[in-house]
Amino acid sequence: MLNGLQLLDMLRETENKMLHLHRAIDRVSSEPDFKETVSVLTVVVRDYQMQLDKMKHALRNIEISHQQNQNGQHENTQH
Image (cartoon, rainbow, N blue to C red):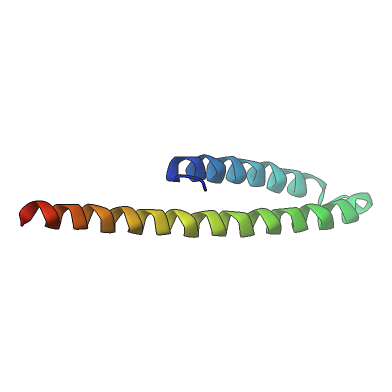
């Protein structure tokens, strides 16, 4: 299982890849010869977006778990 920093690095890397894909799609989308390429790249971008959404969800869960652990430790030190 990945920790939060590893997930964050993967998230940044995936967002960077998506940026490059969007640029490529923009560049070739007006070319009729590249219709199939645009379709394939669009599917790849959708897959990356799904991965990003999963990573963001996992990061939120890590953050919530971390906050709950800190709150529990804080409460234990007050008793």
